[in-house]
Length: 254
Image (tube, rainbow, N blue to C red; front, top):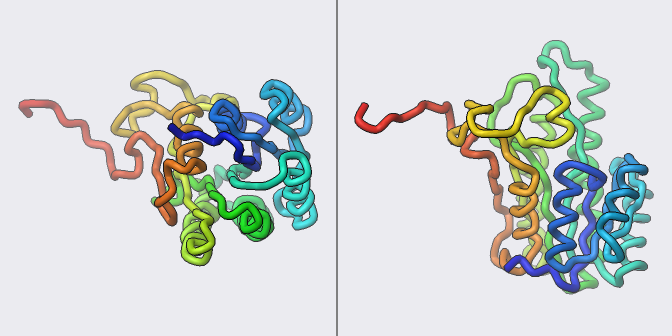
């Protein structure tokens, strides 16, 4: 199941957190991976951990030149590109009325324009490979209105829409495009702002807990694999039920 043997996957934001976990699972499933990030020290360490089927490239996702260099590097190292995981992103935590225009634009540039450039740049290589799979990491904030996420939420709604446009335009070329929408997930970044693991620690979701990075990464690897060969244009929420609506506890007999 979820066999990626012989496939080469580019994973942005792969130095740590969800991106690194997706890289680990992809390598375990047989893939070659090129992980990219602006965090060079962490990225080199993750690539070294993953062994001979992993490479690291420093990468600014807002740069067309960097994107072309990364795709060319993947082809030179492993012969082709079959998968792309657009995971790199930055967040916001400010009320809309207090968000600066400059930072709003920066978030859109990284989270949305970066995804667009990546999709655009990788298509020729995927055509040459006979097809491929693009997995764009959106968010639960791309499925609902979420306070304090003006730039982030807007960008993730945009990623959701861009994924569907890509699915429509590229379907007959055997290139699938899907979006994954994680809910609150425990990573070093979220731990730093007080997110805790364990049952009962996140009552906003029906499952009353945050997600773990491997739970999100497993969904990513599925979409990269041929097991998802008829899945395109989908939006896969991996959020413990968070986007189902307000959480109301039901007790049997009441």
